Image 1: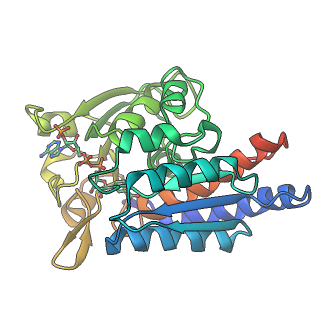
Image 2: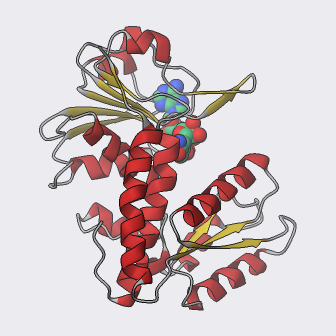
Length: 290
Ligand code: NDP
């Protein structure tokens, strides 16, 4: 029987634990607070932001929201970040990407106080992760690792193929998996659009992580028995969400697989809450169990 890695169920159990950590902080008069900043009128971005706000409130956290007109000067966004950096009630700051073309995305990531960078994209936090001393693990990669753990798979010594090399998914997930830590110690192959013989790389891995953003590009014929497959892809095709893996043919081949929707998506939001609770603890010198 193929094990279907249920992202909603796993997210619920992690959120229940996080609720206890939030209580530890509120007992000290600290309510973990996440500020979301939206400078876009893209409906998908609006939905993501409101899901994040709702998730915060559900576990007793505070959520703050700033909306900036996408036509406004970039300075308005930089100034907003500066204000949020100074606000003691805000422990985590999330600027919903992408930002409009006239805004310098790299500057946005640099402006966020690294202690409040709950996305884990600030160069200081990226550097810490790469050198094996992560402060905030990026949310989607962290969620992926929790899902592999949920499937009962020890990554030590395993061959992992990651399809995709973006800064937000492919590179950090590859990096975390190769670290000399629990849930690491894997041998990682990172594939991208110039990779040759992709099928050979996916077929020969123990774990496949698909994060290319190409609908159903990996089907059962590119996979093997015994594998664990995590599908990060979120693609809208004819109004429906599909992953990068063709679920129906893949699930008959592999040992464990995550579906889309109901896989990585809910885990990404959960790990954002996790990082915000961690940030609130760090900023107030309160030890929280995570
Ligand atoms: P990017 O577009 O930034 O990166 C895609 C990567 O896939 C690139 O490295 C690209 O290669 C590679 N790629 C594209 N086509 C192919 C191909 N045919 N063969 C091999 N590699 C290929 O995407 P993201 O990393 O931001 O996101 C990836 C997917 O994950 C998207 O569907 C996105 O919506 C989803 N996502 C889901 C999240 C969730 O919470 N569920 C969170 C974040 C992302 P190259 O570098 O050469 O261009």
